[in-house]
Length: 234
Image (cartoon, rainbow, N blue to C red; front, side, top):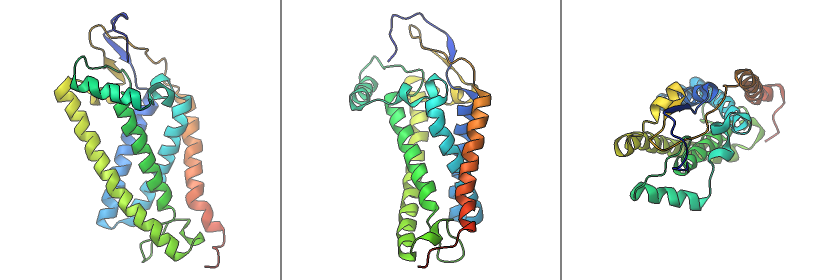
């Protein structure tokens, strides 16, 4: 929570360009991947899985080396902070946070965890016809079928969490007049009167490109390397 006695600032840079690009690219990738699965275009679904894995790996690394508000240590809080924030939503004054608030941080971590679980489980899944994850050939068919079931159910959890996220964004706009969409486009956030926060300095584009390249290579190897290895004799 930001102290009320700090110097007022009209607007500050909060979200760096790499983080904003990650956010929107992941949104497009996930929506495209879900749509492709529902329409039966599994080749596109698998491609989206590979892209999503690269983006998720990037976000995990960026959570440790990115600018202030992108780092996990800046927004991940314990149960006490979450409860206090929820109370502030019900009884003014509402606690303002320039970056992710404790409740929003919980959703961010849950979303990342579910999407990472979806990407990893997809590596071992199959559709009983002609499409299977790159690592499915290294486990038994029964194990792959079980993981496929988890993959499918987790997909619906992701859809539900996306709906909750979108609803919360518009809820904040209506209830607290807090526009969460604009800062994720422009990178800057207007602070309420009497509030202040630490602005990020620079976007670390060179570092971001290097991290993305390494994460993309890792994701590509996970999908491509198994083709060069003989499957286990199940």
